[in-house]
Length: 163
Image (tube, rainbow, N blue to C red; front, side, top):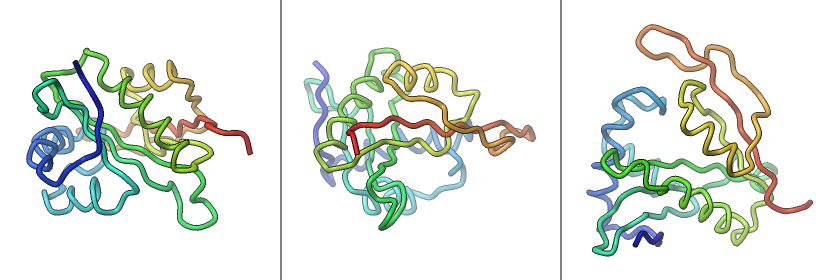
């Protein structure tokens, strides 16, 4: 059984083991050259909350962070980042984390959720976010560089609570 719980500092080695190959692959996140220290700051310290998806043995299968999308007057909209271990994809973990993150966002008082930079070729993520009610509200032409090609990035949004 998969559950989602708050991140503990002892989870970091497992989370880093998931994040590192995803980031360094340069396919879906723009932090290809990120160090472990930088990733820890980004994923754990400069966010509102971090969560992990774990199995019945408390083995980390995925993680997400949630944070305000902008400071101060834009802080009512959150931004979230997700990663799932390559060996555990296709089991609904990202979907579970998306649902959990929306409930947590509402609990934190966020009114909407926005993904600022979804690489358009990440069709699995786009399809999943659309399934969970997100709409593409903008396209940033040629915003992501991958292997010498320039690929569009999408801005996706979902209203969580009425204003």
